[in-house]
Length: 307
Ligand SMILES: [Zn+2]
Image (cartoon, rainbow, N blue to C red; front, top):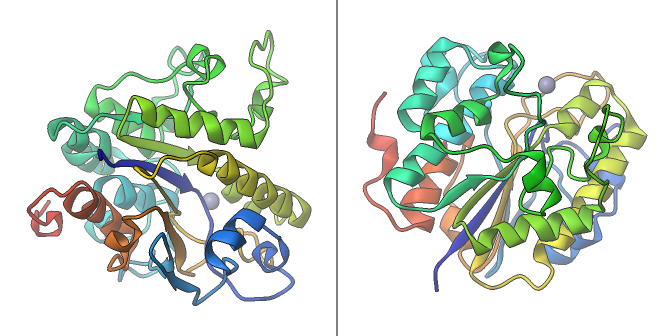
């Protein structure tokens, strides 16, 4: 059976303590709980036939607080971008990081090894017409490095893409909007169905990081309620060949006491028969290698490739 992987990147979700300032301590998440029997809290560890859930390091032996540009470059290239720069870089990648992404982005690497792949996120009509190249995310650069096409709002309307906010809520107030709001369950089904045509499907959502910076408990709980429904849609009638991986670049939303990133470990959740292939992943820069060397059975070990 041809194996498929849905890689979900949630920005700014760490594993924190069981305290009142952590929305993950109180939110129900029935689908996640049914799968793992656990909440997303510090020291969680589940390794069964079909589920792996553990904390992984995002600090990478580099001083300071983990940040988005370096963390996401680690996730989507497998290189320790923070060690390469000597510090954690926030927000968008600089030229130095773009060079790493161009060398080995997840989509470029998949293309070169004949693994059909897609970035599932949709881009708005004006995104590439305005002068905002300095605000291209790591994932956008990763798609450019591979010379892949970007999903448009037409792909989203056709159910072949998922918007970064999952339900299309942020599009509703845009002028001349033509995209209907959908349920997170429907969005999850759409994401799963993209595996009908691609073996590696990447999706990113940066809502939890935005909400975490605002220290908004009710929006945090609402996000995880929505995410659990999204997960229900992904898992609904899911074929055994389809696997789901969820992780993050750094902590934030799990500690609403100060509204910044944290040094906490981030969750690595893998659902599917091959979940154990990821059990040795200990840091965010190790996921890339596990995806290609173990899940897609390719050798040699990428960690030995130097920048
Ligand atoms: Zn942030």
